[in-house]
Length: 375
Ligand code: F6P
Image (cartoon, rainbow, N blue to C red; front, side, top):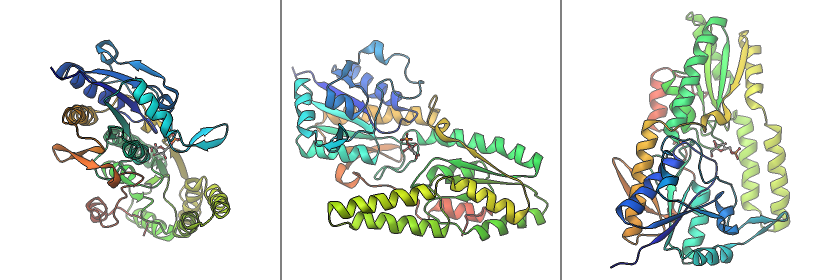
């Protein structure tokens, strides 16, 4: 008889709806279908480094399909740059020791591009690792979609719907700021679904005058209100250029000193652009004469029960991951591909971000229905 396996699972990075549904999907398939034992590390990489785990038995998995957040806790710690007394340390060997201490056959990590980077290092060090794509931003490379995105899009769309009626009643411009520092999938998807009049995403730097023109055009046609869906990472052309130049300096730094200075400069630029949605609101109010208001949706988009699409995706990915462990397939992202799943090598995912291509079909669709994209 084949030796029963013992698998570790953890959730890393920002939480997203569906994490518990994946834990359940993976756990139930592993225990019920394959007869393995599962342990869950607490608080992401932190629990892996500090060897803090709990047994995930049938009772622990019961009733968690619909629960938001993660029953394991999460953190944004990194294996190679783990902060100890304010200094980054490489904890790869500690993680390997803990993997061995726990007699693990595999480690399943639920996270995004950063988690894939950590996982790749562990895979390179010889551990049997799999990653499952999580994030409300939908920016994990190599997968059609990530769990958490569909729920966040529902929440953001509902907010845009509600903002419409109040914007309409008061003849105001309302700017709904949605999550997404680098990727605009959530703002674009919810913006189209909610019928936002203007959609601003990080991948398409905006020109304030184009937005003003669009709003004035709406007023001339009798619509004396506008709803703007704006991603937290969306910037006007000039701010976007400053940010890109500062990021390039960090990436091209040739010495630790140069890198430190470039990082400090980037922090200053980022700081100077804080509250950019409020700045845009003031500019629009001044140029159009319409009162402007800002609603920042923030963490509401990450919380609460996952929608049906995310529960289904999470369960499929969890079950597929258990099958891959059974087949001895490691070093992969368990990607969603159409109605199926597919192993994608971690080197194609690690540290990468899937951005909205400016010629993407969603962008073209938004333009066709008359939505202003700020350029
Ligand atoms: O990556 C998901 C995300 O929700 C982003 O959209 C957002 O910018 C970021 O996390 C916020 O991170 P934190 O939880 O560290 O504040």
